[in-house]
Amino acid sequence: MRAVVTGGAGFIGSNFVRWLLRRDAGVRVVNLDLLTYAGNLESLEDVAEAHGPRGDGRYYFLRGDVRDLDAITALLGGTARETGHAAAARAIPVPDCVVHMAAESHVDRSIMGPAVFVDTNVRGTLTLLEACRGELTAHPRPFRFVQVGTNEVYGSLGPNDPAFTEATSLAPNSPYAASKAGADLLVRSYVETFAFPAIITRCSNNYGPYQFPEKLIPLMITRALADQRLPVYGDGLNIRDWLHVDDHAAAIWAVLTRGRLGEVYNIGGGAEVANIDVVRTLLRVLGKPESLIQYVTDRVGHDRRYAMNSEKLCRELAWQPHHNFDAGLAETVRWYLDHRRWWERVLTEAYRASNALYLKDS
Image (cartoon, rainbow, N blue to C red; front, side):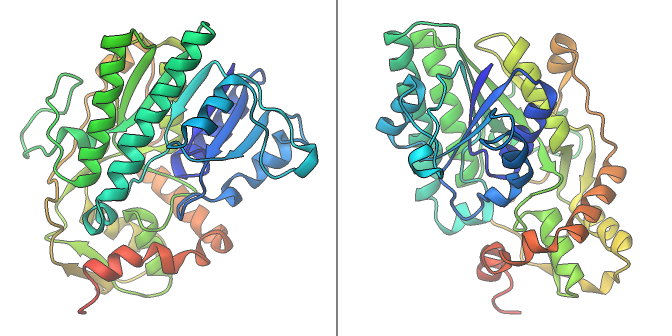
């Protein structure tokens, strides 16, 4: 397999690249990433050493934009060359699949500026689809495209509502969620109109190592370590279904290799927990007082509850999440304790949205 992973320097992308190269010695992976604020090649230093040009040669990095049709066309056609090795840059092999993860992903930032979310998430997906369709028309071959989506496209659940299924209507409530729903619908339209070989996945909230510290868990860990206030929206009782990023990687692999073309697969961790309980658990693991918690004005359009029904994925592809949330959360805390250099240098950017939206007057 020769796989292109878009957004491979981000949180889920870097963990998937590492998992995939570890999982299958026959896989070659091309990481296509623009390296915007949340993309960090330091997250893949070990991968580049083991699998880059000085290792076994199975990992390639190409700095590029999913909105750049010419660059994507060159990548798919086998005429692109790896970024970062000057005259010795390696030719990138012709891929037989794309796992599309590149996206603007932080809801708070989408509230502050929706346009870039539509541009990257919708136009970027359209550009990828058009480039892939053009390549497959010119050079037909077995090929798969996996659109990695989010449960946020389904909207919000009440306390007693059944979990989201793949048949749940789309009802996004934030600009981020709407942009991802738009991307999913474009993929669906290409499947129906052009018989394009795509599959859509929708995951619950991920956690684990290398997550940019603007998201809930790393935000709270890094702020607690500095004895700073921990901002909690509203009453803190918003519920999320937590999925370890390695379990997510295994699910994507199952979909990529065995999933039915044209289908949607939900991926959930089976761990519904209120935000305030996550924060309290983190404080307990870190030995910090709950007095650090500061309730702030709730986020506009804040979804109350997410829950994912993953029965289809489990039944058809024999996938199951393997990480217990409490144990996985403790492991994640240890990772951030052991990797301060990775996250300390990005805190100004990581805290940008929180400072602008709900800590500015406190």
